[in-house]
Image (tube, rainbow, N blue to C red):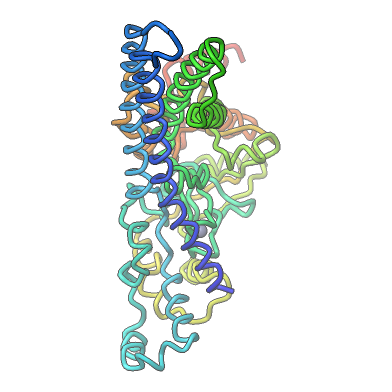
Length: 450
Ligand SMILES: [Zn+2]
């Protein structure tokens, strides 16, 4: 079974790598038909047999627009491919993953060929570096994240399961950071996964979503220009003579098909950017209940106890035994390799942090910070950034200590409903600093009225 999955995955990645070349071939063919057959052979020097006047001025304007759009399209495509291949936004494997890989290798009889090597690995535990990864997957691990996956609890708010623990991927053997999903095509968890797209060579995720939107936007403009010009002159030639040419018809079909495809994708992707969602999150967006672990200071906890307010709580870091147990899922018994990398040793000296487990209303998106701000988090702050495929999305920084992604009013409402908002002045100083002056003024006013 695992062999088949591995083969499928390799096929998927192989196809995804080949499709962009195929797409470039289509663009090359379209450019030849458009430039040579339509603009040169018909508009600039029409055949004597049809007695049509040359339309050189129109041809030049049409060609200039075409090649400007083509250059912009190719630049955005190059930027997108580069990001998809070199920075796909993958989450590293947990230590136990390497233990399992080693165990599976020895199970499948490779020991017989390299007994001494396997024994050597066993005796010194498991090599926990990415060097053990198959060659074709090296590119997937070549990036480094701007944060440590296992330190989710150092932020003030993180997405959790109803029990207060973050979701765990039993394939990657690691925690899933906020909004990440496991992508079966590359067999890895991906930060803010949107979808696996063979047309662009792999995974569209938080690192490439901006460039994906730009590519399909320019793709829609490019194919619209092709479609309108080709359809207009095709109709004109049909009036002049009984004209029928396979290349013209193929170009019309390709332009129409790709315009519908890129235009539709552009609209849905822009919609997701405005509402701060993704193709995957959109599947259950209207009913999804988010469980959030929200940091509560000892003083807040004391006040809650005095007021007999019931809160579901969890403290981090978890006891070392429990962490090891969780990192070994599902059901591994050999922990010698993982032990060396267990977070317990690094976290022993840190103080504990307690979190209240809160749940949103169905369909409420805690990451929705307003349409324009949502869009800017992906596309950039200025119109120039929206149009140019240069700067990466602002949301990639992950430098906010409150949470991995900016939080919207849903979280404030949640805290207020639970009673935590009233005590927030005693909670996180860092969160406090980030709150807008406007909100603190309005809170003060409402307090005064109360
Ligand atoms: Zn995973």
